[in-house]
Image: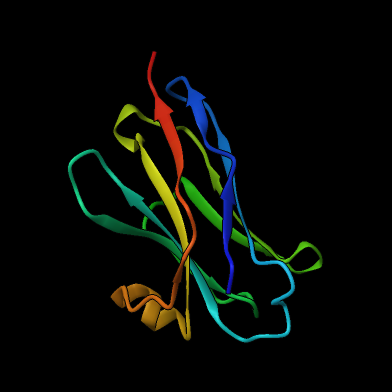
Length: 118
């Protein structure tokens, strides 16, 4: 599975941002996709995950994950961003959502940097 993350950027506190993770040509495969954040000097932390059937969860109520089946894309809508949300965000795929939760990842996409500062 080739994953391509995009949508990062520099925003101010309180702003919103939507990250996208595309997996071209893989809509027929059944797997789960998750977003992870790597904060400066730290390891990757689970943020949200979803299956292509729409089963999902998120660690933060400000972040909503969704699937666009027509575009083979998983989006992470981030609202009311705070400076502590500054991180490199990675999307990743695994066989099940449980595997995503456990960090048992099959494929990682490249990261996209989100910087929140005033």
